Length: 123
Image (spheres, rainbow, N blue to C red):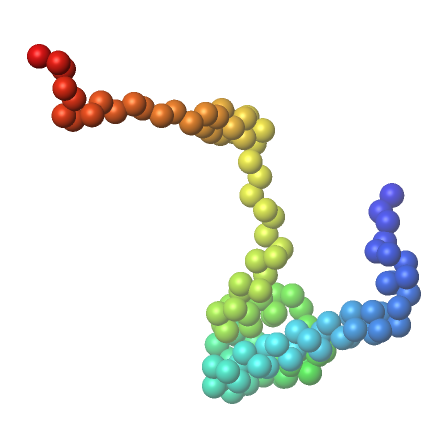
């Protein structure tokens, strides 16, 4: 059974308000608008390059609901797909490979005695 987050946190009004669906949509829209303005691109140009309508871009910038595919188009056009990196699964190392790598690790320090160069052999 899946347990929710700490119930006191979930019931906190500020948590619910700041993390509501609408609040998150507004944050995403604000982020996209800021990135668009940073790049000095107007809505018409960005929409055209993303192959969406200007009204769709306007909707997301206002925090309205749009399709995920349109969001991806906008992120790609702004060259900010990196924001989706958190959704990529972490690479998994197989237990066999992990065991082999563990065997390769040095377990001791070896010191080599060096002969002095001008050693007197007593002749």
